Image (cartoon, rainbow, N blue to C red; front, top):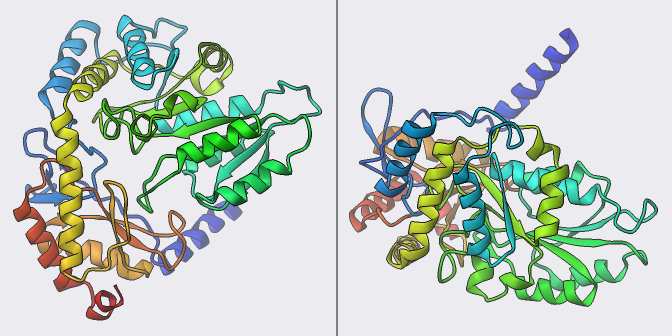
Length: 405
């Protein structure tokens, strides 16, 4: 124990010396004031980095649904899905999510992280072609930590392909051992680089080499596509993706993760995944809020359009001000800083001097030298708020960094 504590101390010192030590900022979210939050002393903070992309977390539709469900069913589920933890609203939500993605079945998990970890590890620990043929899994180099955890926690053989590089992916698929089952794991919107995967091209390769596809749409569901089914719906290729994974905790403003796919595949994961079987199910009040939010957002086309208009406006404001914006084809707006300590300092000054919060993104989330601030403007961020933000960033970010842009 003494040796381990010393190891902890040394590791934390190294993290602090590198400017990577994470300090949580206590902020109280306000349903009636979003995107303003409150600090413990009562002062307001304008938050620019929330993943409540559509501002649904405080919307009366999910809030009222949660309150009504809590009054009826209580605060918690009371057990796993198999032990009194399945309510009618859980079944309704799974059916709604399957419908959203045009799939036969859906399955809820306690978070998006758990859904990726549990689903991927369960699939890759199976041996559909026998024990002599483990899965060959092809993972994009910028996949989320939850996908990596699921892949590394399996007996699959890992092949990492360069980010969105189809030629490299095909070279790996071509070299697969004969008879091996294959799965390509990737995301639609990559939340740190703000770029988007070529889903159709990946599906073309999957068809050519008889591979399954596993698509993480957590930063796209609710926002992209005619009904918020994600980039795969927008691009008209959802039917070609084997499994779509998503979250209820970002655009829908609630909590939980899920997968959607063929009924037999989803049922297999439901019946064998420890991360699903042995954990308490989502509280019915949370499931009710999520169900109400998904149904509302599917019809609220103006809210989605406003999100993208706001993102485009902030990008233009940054460019006009000469700020070092990283190119983005999504709703996420990253700003390059390039040094861990400076990134933390810019974030802290933005908070302490200007009453605004933007999350510093440092290694290992992004490579060293690629440190950045991540902005997620939403429907409720006004032009006046953007003016204040740009003026603050111009005052804080060193001139030489802005010139490098």
